[in-house]
Every structure is written in C-alpha cells, then in structure tokens.
Image 1: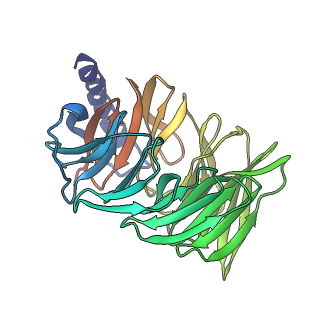
Image 2: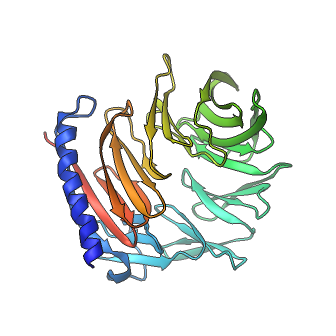
Image 3: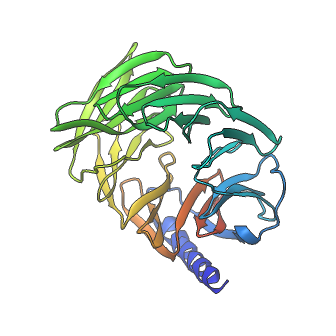
Length: 355
C-alpha cells in the first residue's frame, strides 16, 4: 500500500505542474486542468461477473478488464499470455492453449474463433496472426469472419483504419486490402541495404498510409490515395534506426505522424512543409494518445523498471514528465479523462477546461 500511495502522490504533484504549464502554453487550449479522480488497486477492487455498458477497458501488469466510470466496480481477468482488448469485447490468448474465444463482457456472449494464432486489435477489429507469422485472419468484435490471407514472407506489422488494412512484410512489401480482404495495392519498399518493412500506419480516413522500411538507411514513406492508387508523397530518412517492429500512428486529425525510433519518437507533418521534430525517451515506448491539433500528446514509456508519463506540445516540446516506480502498462483516453495503468493499479485523471 505504501508503494502505491507514493506512486499516486507523485501523480498528484505532476497534475498540479501540468495544470500550470498547460495554462501557460500557447499551443494548447488555455485553461486546461487535470484532476485525479480516483485510484484503484485492481486486485482488491469489488469484482463483478459482468461489465456494464459504458465501462472503461484497462490493462495493468497482471490483469485486464473493464471498470465503472466511478471506479467502484471492476470486471477483471488474469492475463494468460496476450490479451487483445476492445471497448466492447476481448480475446485472452493462452500460449499453452489452442482455442481462441472472443468474449463480450456486457452481454456475456462468447464467439469461438476456429483459427490458431495470437490476436491483436486494430480499429475495432481482431487480427489473429498465425503461429508462423505468415498468415492473418480478421474478425469483427462479434466474432464474424472477415477474411484470411497467407503470405510467403513474415508479417512485421498490421494497421487498419477507415476501411483500409495495411500489412507490412519482411520481404519489403506492404500489402493493402479492404476489410473484406480484397486486394487494393502493393507498395514496394526499396532504396536501402536491407529492404524490410518494420511498421505501418493508416490514416483515419484511409487516404494516407505510412511505412517504416529499410536499414542503412531507414526510411519513412508517406503514401496518399489519388484516384484509385496510393502514390508516394514523400520519403523521410531516419537517423535513429530501429531494428525491430516500429510503432506508428497518425494523429486523430491526420495532420501528424508519430514514428518510434531507437532514440524515442519522431513527429512528422503530413503536408507541406512536412515539419519534423524528435522526442527522446528513456526506455521503450509503451503506449500513447495522439489527439488532434490543439491537444497535447501523451506518451507512456518504460526503462524496464520504472515508467514515465510525458506530456508534449505538438512541436515535440516537453510540458512535463514524471517517473513512477513499477511497470507501466496502459494509457487510455476518453473525451474527458486519462486512464493510467502502473503495476496493478489504475488511475483516472479528469481533463477539464475553464469556460
């Protein structure tokens, strides 16, 4: 208990500092303030057999589930191997088992998935990657089969948004489909000593696709849909090459692109003059929230022992950051709140603005 109190006392101090700096900032709506609503130790919370509509999804160190907005009740389960979590359904992958089941915790429905592999979520869909990493099956949140695709190369990354699915392959191509599995385009990654794809992202409207590819040098290529084709709009060289999977995301308004690098994160504008800025991180990127312009960027990282919550302007300038003892696991944003998972505790931070 003393450890958790210490962690969240530090969070309270951070919130005061954030409120001051955000109020003084000139790139964020003035009068923004942050208030700690509650902190819950998930293992000790009152447990419910089912979630209710409107409960918030969460992941902490050993558990996942859904929590009531006031923090009074929680539907929880133990993380068995890997969990794919949506606001309305989840798939808890047991690496020792063979059968995948998508579960709706509100209706208490279960949808068996007749494929082997491990699940991830993208844009309210489940993507189940085969054990050999060369195939993927897509399912809806209700367990409805959408499509299945197999490749002659390892899958390195998947993203989906705006009805478009982008699948990066280690052989150096990015295959583009619609959510029914119809092939739309095949994007080639070239120009490096090693032409492999390490990450991909799709804009919320499906009209832009970004790909991190290659080593020596490593590039980010930005493609825009013109007529019925995706045409390369710009290619950027990265100084801090990452030799494993790269997390990428467009902002909610598609004006910026976030790219994980070996040194932290790079922000890239998606239109002329393609402004770039770097955010150094101590450790690995764990989670982020990347809202539209006028809002800060929230980044959760970890050095393996301690977690760090950083809040940044859209030009990459740091507002404030705070380190926490323990494992950083989850960052989730709703219209009026941030939910932060550290160790096995979950904190709700209210976001308000003066009228």
